[in-house]
Length: 88
Image (cartoon, rainbow, N blue to C red; front, top):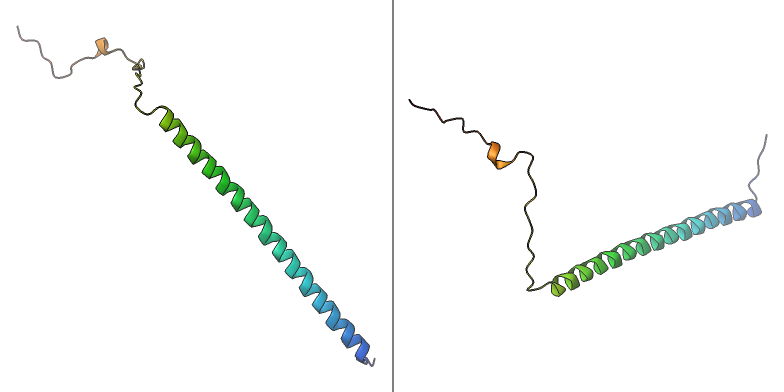
């Protein structure tokens, strides 16, 4: 079988290769743009959280909070001293 490579088939092959490269480049740029948008969204979200924390701290600046101790599992009256020996 004899295959001839004419000018038109070479030109068509070059156009197909260039089209594939342009398509890949376009998809790459699209993916980069999507990644940048996601990073910007995360950065804005982090910035809002920091700003809200700062406002909350400034709002409570100088105020005193009293925190009551929580009940422990064993009351303090049931503590037994292991080193205590009774002498008669």
